[in-house]
Length: 136
Ligand SMILES: [Zn+2]
Image (cartoon, rainbow, N blue to C red):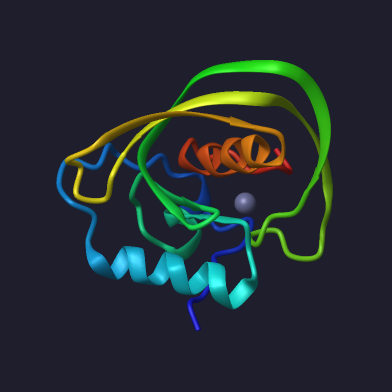
C-alpha cells in the first residue's frame, strides 16, 4: 500500500520545484498504485511524499502542469481529498481549463482543454502543487 499523507502534515503545503529531468519511475509507480488502491480520480505527488510537480488525473500523468486559462461558468463541485479523509467540501470551480504540461520524460509538451468534472479534478490536483488544500 502506498501511504497517503494527510492534513495537517507540512509536506502537503510545500511547493515542489519544476521537474527538470525525467520523473523517476518510482514516483510514477507509486502514483498509479495510490490511485488504484484508493479508487481515486486523481493524485498529486506531494500527497505520497514526493516533492515533484507531477499529478495523475484519470490515468494521465501531467508533469509541470500549468493552467493557462480558466473559462466557462463557475460551478459548485462537491469534492473530497484523500489527504483529508472522510470530509466533503463544496468548491467553486470553472468548468473549462486549458492546461499545459509535459510528458514524464519531459520530451513532449501538451496543451489541452478539459471541460466539466475533469476540469475540476485537474484544478484540485494542480492546487496540491501550490500547497493548497480544499479545506484552506
Ligand atoms: Zn486532494
